[in-house]
Length: 335
Length: 304
Image (cartoon, rainbow over all chains, first blue to last red; front, side, top):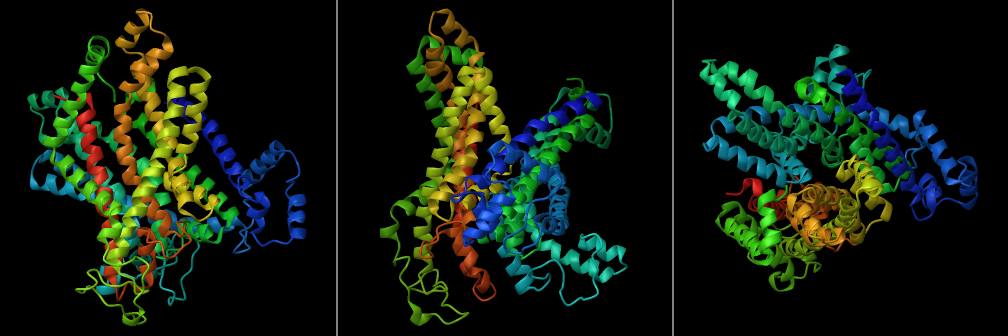
């Protein structure tokens, strides 16, 4: 297992180097070069010269790349053009919000999708099966921002069950945020009202964001359970007289897990980018919305750092998924 | 993924033309019996029809304004003259949705064409030459696939500046590694197949085996992927337009932007958000259903 893990981690190195080159070249491909990226399009020539000097833009490209990697490794992503704050700080402040949103969405998708796919497979051809197939098709076809508006209109504007936007009620002044995870903050600071309020702000965006992974998880669970349930070892277990729940737990679910875990991992990465749209619809202050605003304002230091940051998270999530294969399936380890 | 060895051997060695026609005819027969394919194809045809004949179908110009009927925060809803009502600038919503289909279709087709042609060219190089060419192309694809696709598209579109061309290029580039990897994978399994070996042993040159046998037999998954990529391209284009990355010209009726513009009026005019949303869902659903049905019809593992 350790060797398998070590090899898998080593495989990350070329990917991460490649990513850093891609992102490094990204701002250099801009018309006007990286000076424009760092200063915006309306900078004075003096400032441009100053920045060229400061960042060593007159040096050879490979030297610039090395110093870029050095600054990234020391978590220096430059300064945002719009907020004039260090990009690293801006991202760090907003990251907990995006994590909260992504995790809640994935929890919804897994807790609904896996049982739904399982029931659909066990009652193959029934109305539950047909409904889940139709539902997952719709879930894949509907854009998250369109669904976001629908949820916002029905549950926030019409029914008033949930707030329309933001991460917390701005009228609650005594909220403290030691961790940045607002639900957790409410709990640790002994402010249950704030925790509930933060949770209520999470529900609608998380629901909107959850639809695509929910659709994929339902489909893959159904397909995977259908396939495994037809295997010889399941028939053998039945013939041995094992009870249905034991067969389900030990033989069907465990073997059906692998493709489900793959989809969960892939979808988590996609959720991070889907958050750009969802957070914009609900004015939810996370990395996604920050990135969307940066795109609108052509704030390239933020775009560059945001893409690198989210891509690295995506790569790491996929690493965890691959490592979990080793735990779930002993065959993977020995390969 | 690929044709089973025995079947492929028969198709290419003994009766190439006839047997390939057989595969195609078989796929068409399967498609005609699949309800999924019929619904998908109907939706796609409807979408293409609306896009192509927009000027004849739309009751008004998409840019004509009737400001006499619009008051701040309240616009006339559906009526006999304006079936889907007027938008915030007094333009006929139905006409804008109809013209919007054109932009969605063009962006979808151009971007998937960019992704498929460049991706296939790279995949063909990697699959045909192997060795360092293969490594180079595949590691490049790995790196691009390490960035979630929407994020990569946002980055590229932001870099190129706001225009419909940028959106097409951005979505096209995002599709390149997908097609490259797909074609290369299909070609590798075809290259190892018995019929490729048989052709080689008959004295056919390596290049000819690749171009005449391996490549055409690897196309099925590419066709499926292209159809599914159209569905994704339409969603992604709408997403980019929603973020303000589409055309800078506000008179152009892009569905994604139309949706974004309704944000301020959502409480009073929810229908204005519903129509573009519905248009996106219908077109995406069409390509998705058709793609899935094609996959089933063309995949030899699912045949018989």
